[in-house]
Image (tube, rainbow, N blue to C red; front, top):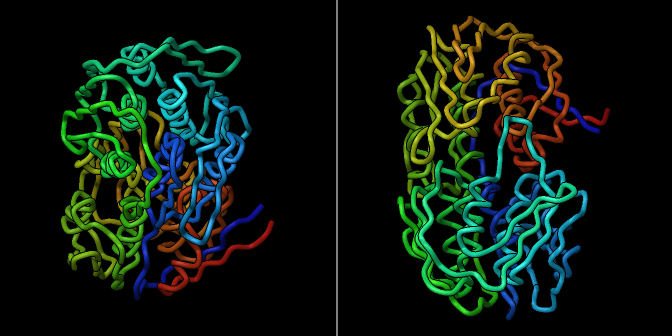
Length: 418
């Protein structure tokens, strides 16, 4: 087990390379099993624990998997296993994408119910609604989701709530269904579009990803392809926010600036400078920021996954900020850790009231989930003294080599074995 030790109050300067998007990779890799011909080579894969979990699940299903630095080659042509029941399946939320992928290819699947970050109730009712609408029978037995169908038939499906997971999962199932499936009230996040583009590269016929309506015309088969995952919007946003909080000037490379517009707008409102440069953004800050109000919303709104890093920055911003978390009902677990460092935050349901203080001071804190872990790193970077961060296995799930990237920007941060 490891921990991070951070000595704060150092401005950040330099360049940082953003990895491939975690939220896209963990859906694209399961989708690769839908190809019954050819081999898929997927590039710009982030070096994170969630990807390692997916690799092991793919191998347990009978795929041939070859990893080379930031690319993965998947040969699923000889695969005949539709049961995903390993420990890796149970511990990672995104393993539910194997339900849609296996159902699409084999018309049946048994997948253990997944876990993931403890940030609130995350039911899969909308996934089940979509599978059943396509003609599948769904049951939950002994902690596993069991789906089966004689055949899947395209239909119209209106999601009751906007759900990234359900949008992608039902899109996977519909890809090899008969006829046309129309998905309405869908998620529009960049990684939804990326999964659709990947499926189309394999031979799918999907239109409208990134809009309110996705149309999937079923095809008979998919073939392996070569594909590169989009840059990680959330990792990029985290380094942008960290730079604004610490002060300095950092260029964040390998990004799609349009994906970052809601984050850029808030940082500019707080007093930082954000400059777009094609496939990079540069953030400049003197570290003296002012309060803002933040409400998390589905894309293109402010991302829930950077709410926690942003709330840390607001702790030392002048004035009172109001944060409304409209996506998850339990995403303020990190607040108690920030209070240990001197933050003034009051949580009322899904709303946090943050009164900016002059400084945070180092303490022993823990990462309660993935994005809370990033928030603790930023807290350590802006605090006086030394901060020790425990529970960093959460951070490793989504941030490749976070200590090395910050160290290259001038931060005093190191990983040590406990």
